[in-house]
Image (tube, rainbow, N blue to C red; front, side, top):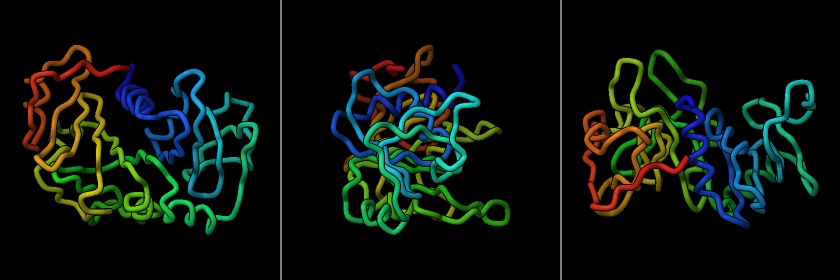
Length: 217
C-alpha cells in the first residue's frame, strides 16, 4: 500500500452517515473509493455535482462527467449536476459538513498552504479558499515529508497561505494529528511506526497523549 492509498483510506474514516463532503484534487478524491459499506452520504464536487461515487473502471467512464480536477467520476442514483455558482452557494452557505484538501504545507496553528510555491508553482487558489472557510470541518491531506526528507508539518507555514487557522485534522502517511487550542495533538501513528519515528520527522511541536493509537487503514 503506497502513501497515497494510506492517506485516502484514513480520510474515508472521517465520514459519517448523512454528511455532505467535498473532496479536493489528488489524494482526497481517492477517498471516494474507500467509503464504508452501507454508508449513506453525499459527495459534492465544486464544479457542480452532488452524489457521486467511486472512480469508474477503465473504459466505463463518461467523458462528460468529471470532478473539479478533470478526473472521471461515477454519478449515483439521485445525483444532480448544476452550474458552478450554485455549487459555490452550497459551499459558502455552510452546507458542506467536511472537506478534505491536499496541501503543500500545514502548521501547528491550523494554517494551510496549498496553492503556490513562489517562482515554481502557482496554479491559482481555485475553490480552496471557499472550502477552507465554508466547510464545517477541514481535513488536510499531504505527505509527511518532501522528497528531501524535510517535514511538511511545520511550526509555521513558509509558503503563501490559502487560509489561516482553519484546519481541524491533518492526515499523512505517517500520522494523524488534531489541531486544538492547546496545540497539535498526535492522535495516531501508521502501522510499523512508533511515536518517536513521527516526532523525529516532524518540525511542528507535537502534544503526545498517553493513548496514541495505530492508524486504522
